[in-house]
Image (cartoon, rainbow, N blue to C red; front, side):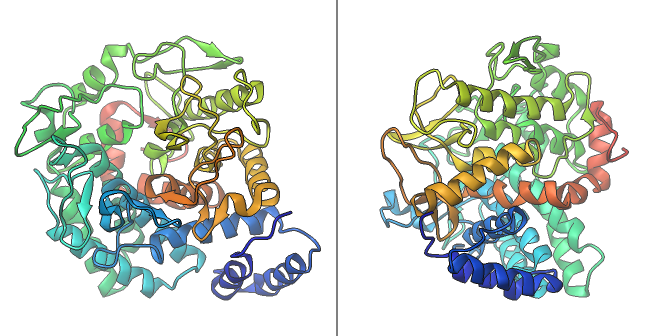
Length: 458
């Protein structure tokens, strides 16, 4: 087993700040045993270590002015176009959920977490918004839009939805807290209610649009039609008590009047929903994760899908594909699977069975932990125990690697790190799922769209 340069300090942090103080002596013993080359970490302790180390991306690694997640952190220091100062709305939304995990697990104190979240919320109040929606990127020191592309210099409704999902969890977590915490919850509530989802129907059409720019209007022309990672956008748009959209927007736009439904199977598993018009195929695994950091798919269904079956099957199909490994890439198998959008050997790619470049992205299997806990744990153990410091660093597992190309970049992306501690926590305690699904307007919005939940009565 390769040595891990951050092992001792990370485990000591968990020992010092673990929320369950009775476990301190046990964790201290595990530190000593591991350093002496004796017994490896238990699965439970390794999960906590992965959560804590990844959480640090959003804590120690946050941009100073905003307190939000940096778009990317390259340990090798090679940043394109001053991206070190760019913060990301979607990744930042995942980050505020990770901060809740950090508070709940004792990685930071409750007061430290509150202070950081107040800083973030105060920043978001003043940052550029376009009919209530934040842009994809913000320049951290100023809060001004950082164009994601020439025409993508305005509101980004999907990234805004990822942020709103996190903010609602923050509100619910602190709503009954101290006076300071209740003030934080009130500020968060206003941010969420100021998002004008109706504007993004482009003239009251029965579909939501991803982008609007003050300079280019609707020229990006990207209607949100399913299925992909954007389900949460429709749930939030329908749930808004101030700028809510009609149910027809979901059924006619997102579900395409039922054309979203798939009867295909792969490896003996039903595909359930057509992904972006590609009949019978599954896409990158972030489609099964980003909308479900707060939205609990377990027991959730509507006229189109059982969402637990959808996401679990998506995960299992990808795993079987990597085991079959039709392109013969090195390192694929039962302990190394998971294809999703990430850095790739040549730039960036939305990895999937249809776009497979021999790149494994750890967040794919790790953020699938609720769907396939045993299989995801196999990947975690392989990455940590076998590949070691090749894939493990200051903020947890690096973004992606390829054994075929002997490619092990020391780089992180917020959008990939964020789901890891959140989804692991959802399987362990259900923390974020309980918070989001407990919000009264979310219950109303889900009912409005025809959803049912056996786990969280609507």
